[in-house]
Length: 182
Image 1 (cartoon, rainbow, N blue to C red):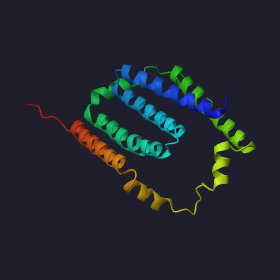
Image 2 (image 1 turned 180 degrees about the vertical axis):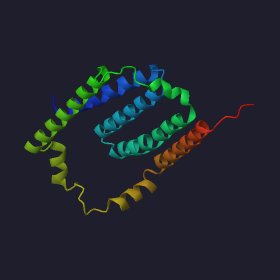
Image 3 (image 1 turned 60 degrees about the horizontal axis):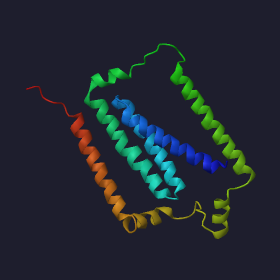
Image 4 (image 1 turned 90 degrees about the horizontal axis):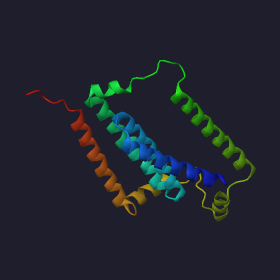
């Protein structure tokens, strides 16, 4: 199995598994962190669909903006909900820590494998882009091109994202507001 297929199935499995856990979990804080994983996995799937702009926008806007605002709103809204996050085990290494170590080692081995395989031979899509002269160089003026794309081709998604950010700000302000006791 090629590394691209392996990464695709890993992102797809992670997105599906995290989304299923997200809708079944009762703890809001853990649900927010599962949403974080789902959004990152979806950004990885967007990269496989050759939608790199949408993948970067997904990470910057939804993960970096909306989700962080939701986490802040959650943490400011209800202190009793945070009591559920206390660790249930006082041991140094428990089952979730072992899972984290296994996951970290799996990602490390995947990165080492990718580095070794790319050092031996470049992927076909990179060599084709290099042959056609479509490589992005450090001297290219990408900011100007990105600005033109934002205001012409991607103006509708840009405005939709700004509306979502405004809705998230209003929701965060509403959730963090203290209610009066009457």
